[in-house]
Length: 85
Length: 85
Image (tube, rainbow over all chains, first blue to last red; front, top):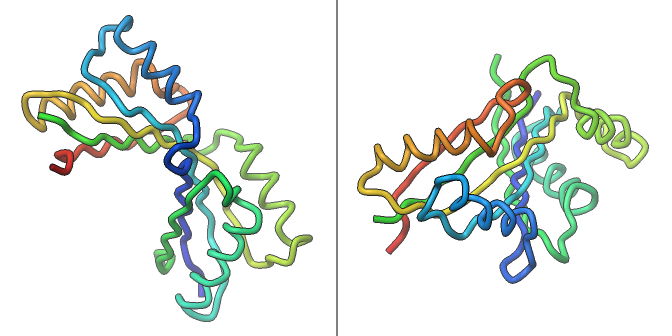
């Protein structure tokens, strides 16, 4: 069975986010006031073969902790759902 | 009023995704078979001051199209919800 996996990766609280800080600093000059707390993250989407949803979630979590994120500075949220069709 | 905004940016279909392709090529050698269709995107989260949710959504959409994404190669999905508290 195929599952669609979404891995949403964010920097942990307290880890400096230079991309977010740069956006936040630039916005007032570009005409966007009232924007704060900008943070930039990444997403990885893929399709995974697995026997059932639990196996897909376990393998995706593993994969994510081993290769897709740096657990020292990043938090990841893994969402698994059966692929359409 | 404050609103939490999440901008989820993905490459448009047909645009080459070298980061995703590299991950996909590497995974079998790392012990993860059955993974396909890997794509890498980015997220921008921020807090925005606005009178109501419609204004927040309009300004966030504008901001997103003008500065946070490249509409030629990227699609963005903007989610706005009232900030907690």
